[in-house]
Length: 35
Length: 132
Image 1 (cartoon, chains in turn red, yellow):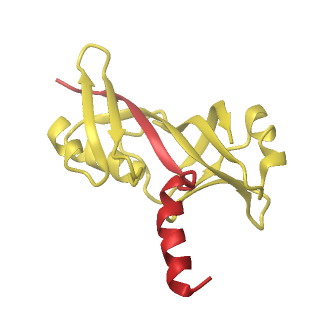
Image 2 (cartoon, each protein chain N blue to C red):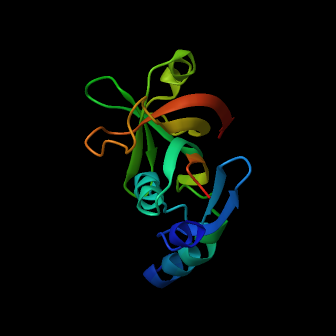
């Protein structure tokens, strides 16, 4: 497989890979002194 | 306060309930939000934070001192406070498993008005969600 073919394969396959990034989904605060 | 928080990096949406004193913050899809920065921004807007809870997804790793850490990318991690629930996460340490945790990152200490920036925030696990 040539480099070009490999690059194209990675380009098309990468969006299908599961998201590996960890992330904050939601933040909830309880606050005091709000008017 | 709503506008001030809405301008913080990574914040998609802010919902404020005046009746309950509750503030719901929805991060942008990339999840690049800094809870410590949200705490500071809230105090800067003249409001005192009693508690900060969050739901976060990441990998469990163990540092050299044996502390469990929820490693979130990019370059964000939260030290997990030791409790009964956190002990059940031990087998996942340094594995490829992603876990979603709901926990408390900050609770106001009695008599203190402002969070101490020199004390690192620790995530107290309240609920363990999906493991993938």
